[in-house]
Length: 160
Image (cartoon, rainbow, N blue to C red; front, side, top):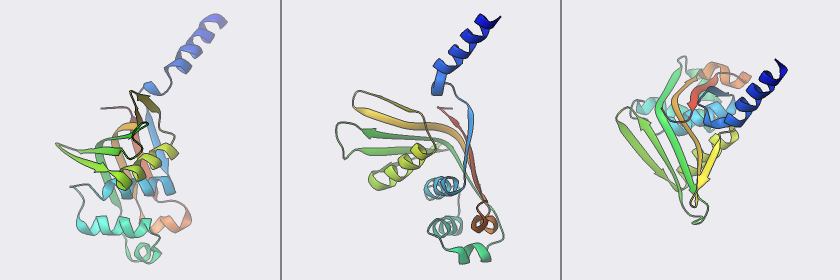
């Protein structure tokens, strides 16, 4: 019985991040991910994008004037960085049938946010893939941000 349990635990440990699982990030990381991905969402209004940008920049006056939640949805997020060409940083955001390609600083901001969320990294042939995720759903409640809450994102590591 003990031998079966040890083998089972070893199999789970070896599977590691390659297994898709439900995950979340909240607090400042959740706000960052929502603002960075939401800025490119074709589903968000200009007012919601502006609100997210302002909140992420620390404008608490916006939080006090806003009494509605903002929800950011993305089907997929995949970021890549070259380990050879240090200038190559890219992210692809999937929104329904549309995809948005980001490069440079915008891509790296999402890449770094995913790394802080402990995204599983994979690499090969000169590229590092950080945190391929799917089913991203972030909810931002501006009224709760100044108290340390109000920002949470749920997602699944790995592709859809």
